Length: 345
Image (cartoon, rainbow, N blue to C red):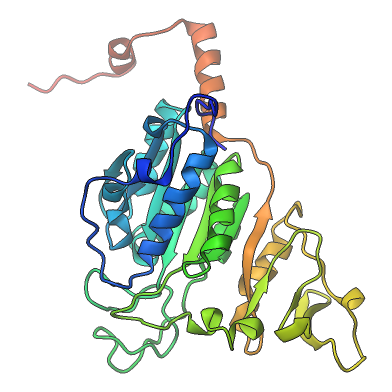
């Protein structure tokens, strides 16, 4: 949660207040619309003035997002939104800063920036729209496309192993990791609330449908007939139950999860793993992040991890105060001319 100015008594905004005067130029039926609407509906709940929000993006369909928010924002260069956002937060710690990116922008050219932003733990909110395709450039496979994906750039099928965004974030010691779905807007709004409230870098991956180039990529998670067997909703302190009529569960065999049947009398809810989003290390959340690589396992949806870590900007501020206490306020010109200086003639 950002240290922003909050005054619910005087700041009473609605979703319309966060809608800009720009025409939205996404394809009809794009999942981006649902994510945009969910954020515009949720932000008024925080009682924060619009001028204290900043949305920063890179390049891609999702990165047009700042144009459509009636807040401050920047549409920057490919994969570099984390660098701009880190600078904004370092110089203006009171602002609520959001990064909007896609699976190509965030994990391909911007992968290195993504990892280092998370490990530093600025108080930023990262929302990654994952449609498993490059939509803006008309349908090449992306870092999250599945093996065998046939596209214009992989006519014989992709032979790359896809990246798991949550696994990468957890590998960088992410303190907050969550997953939502564009078509489950009620749950998505709750994930946006949790993302905002967390103090430190919050990472929210949203499964998003690209109706033109990868339509139906997540249909098994949203169709009413297949959703129960393919989605596992995470609740802190609750056993991992899923399936139609809660007929299945996840049991741990050491560090390996296994799907068990709860209707044949062999196992009960008491035998199941219990979700712990507050686990100190990343082992449990990493198991969740890799679970759906195995056939027959559901996709965990919800908050994987939510723990506290010191924020980078606070450490930076303390170092500046310490330096000024020891050496005085200083001058930039003195710093530049300190030590060995060469003059080119």
